[in-house]
Amino acid sequence: MLSRTADHLFWMSRYTERAENTARMLDVNYQTSLLPQSDSVAQMGWQGMLSICELAPAYQQRHGDINARDVMNFMVKDENNPSSILSCLNASRENARAVRGALTTEVWETHNATWLDVRRMVRGTEFERDPGVFFEWVKFRSHLSRGVVVGTMLMDESFDFMRLGVFLERADNTARLLDVKFHAVQSDFFGAASEKDQEYDFYHWSAILRSVSAFEIYRKVYRDVIRPEQVADLLILNRSMPRSLHACMAEVVGNLKRLVADPQSEALRRAGKLLAELQYGRIDEILATGLHAYLTQFLDRVNDLGFCISREFLVPNQ
Image 1 (cartoon, rainbow, N blue to C red):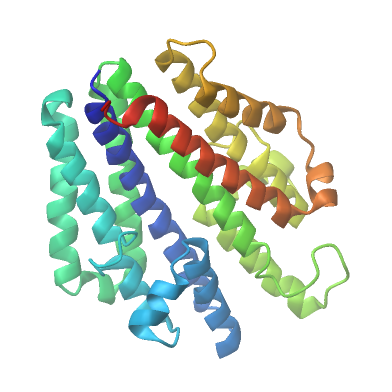
Image 2 (tube, rainbow, N blue to C red; image 1 turned 90 degrees about the vertical axis):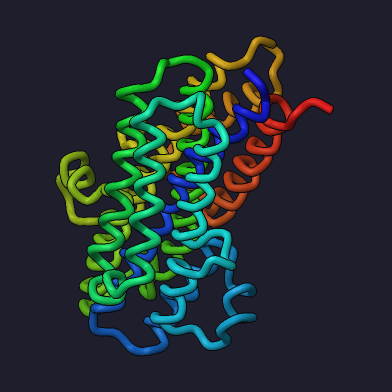
């Protein structure tokens, strides 16, 4: 396969996943902003949203003060923001158009229809009327895109590059969400908290779990009240949780094994090492050494892995 084709397929899927992840983060912030809380706490939530995406400087340059309306417009409709939902879905569609011949008709039409519909929705009043419904729509279109790929694409190199983009992006997002949101809870992680703090924490952790479609899964796995250490365990180490770091890296390694011809592949070595640490890791050890430090290191390594994959597979040969 031409590296240019592989690059378009990889980024097509990665941008669609990024749009879904952005919708999930905006939705959880929107839902928690409806809870009784002070203006300063609400502002911290939107600040955290921008920090997750590393977009705080770009936002402040354009809008200044942080408020819910401007942040949501910036992250949904701003075409000058490359990480906005509109920009991501446009980039995904353009990458799909560039390799139209490598896709089935169903895959192309799904991406094209998603772009046409989202452009119509953000130009109208549908987003402002009910942001929650819009975010659900974005998630549904992402689910549909992945389902059409699995249901209609030949499981060859094209398929593997698309899946590689999905799970690399998902691992990055889950780690960012955990890192920022674990610092957003006011009461101490493991210390004694007031009854009011405990009530706030319950809704906070519930919103985080729902943002990664894990609330029902948490109840099924732990059959317990929501505890921060168990939330971390579920979203980092649980192989059966589809959006956990462990599950994402297992998929990345599986796709890389089918793609690499050289058993000494540096990308496969780095991904395999990261997977082994997740496979045999323990949440108490991670928390003892510091969750923030662990997730920061994980994000750095996933970023390096992405560059390594680009060097080996995606950058056109000169």
